[in-house]
Length: 354
Ligand SMILES: *Cc1c(COP(=O)(O)O)cnc(C)c1O
Image (tube, rainbow, N blue to C red; front, side):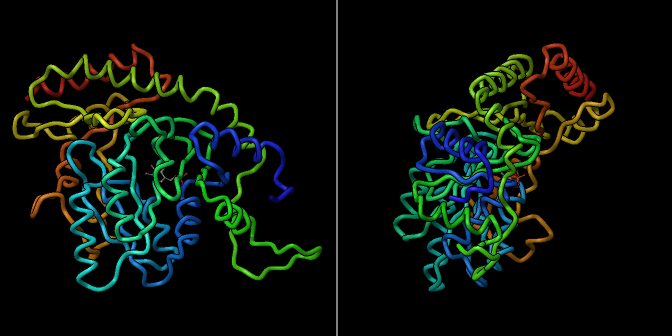
């Protein structure tokens, strides 16, 4: 292990690995860096295909481009909004017919909720393709009683400013493959060979987390369980205050896991209500309250025009539907009841105006 990083980095890695139940972890400057290193460890190279969840933040997919890979997008299923095993199987069958399988699959745990990992892993293992679990939003969440981020061959967390715990910016790569992790550590520190002088035989990056930020991360990790409970309480209050309205619903919690409810996402049936998510977002903005639409799916991004996309049902994209009807409400762990009441009041006002 490199000695130049300091005691907090080593300790933060150890503590996080222990918390999630992985054999090891590498502390990095971002979650994006973690996904990038995982793809390179798996051996993704120019021209290789990588299957990715379409409903996600672009950081799940940009690293595929860093490696010169070709993303292929997979739709969500309605139960968890995460990667549909049905759509994934369709993508594999298509790849099989083409005679070229993907090098890796990036599965996202959206808004703090686990994807249905068992069927997904069964399909991927059947084809011998490794899985990266992008759990950037899902620290503290579980799937079948085991922590999110530990189901794939590699798992990635983010401590960016908006995440459930933060180091202002940072990430962690976790795995049970300790040999792979030490390679990641080597690449993350400019791939410096073991020599007295500065010698380099491989290309590296400046991806390592600083000791100061790792110290902050250690403090944050101590309160993760409280943060999860706080975020779940925020969700429960929104649901109680708005759940009775016809045409309004919330992101479901699939029975296979426990979400950290990183963000509370409300859905509207525009045909029933006569209003769209943007009406709500704009009304909240007038009161200086920030809310956002659901992530715009990757297959709809101009950057990925022309990429292949496989839907959950033939001709029907679940991710498109969720994008059209979802609103991410203010969900901070320290959101007060008064602040939350203000949000609820604005939402009710918009609904009654129609
Ligand atoms: C935040 C996030 C990332 C990237 O994390 P950074 O630390 O900001 O690089 C990756 N994937 C998802 C789904 C995220 O929400």
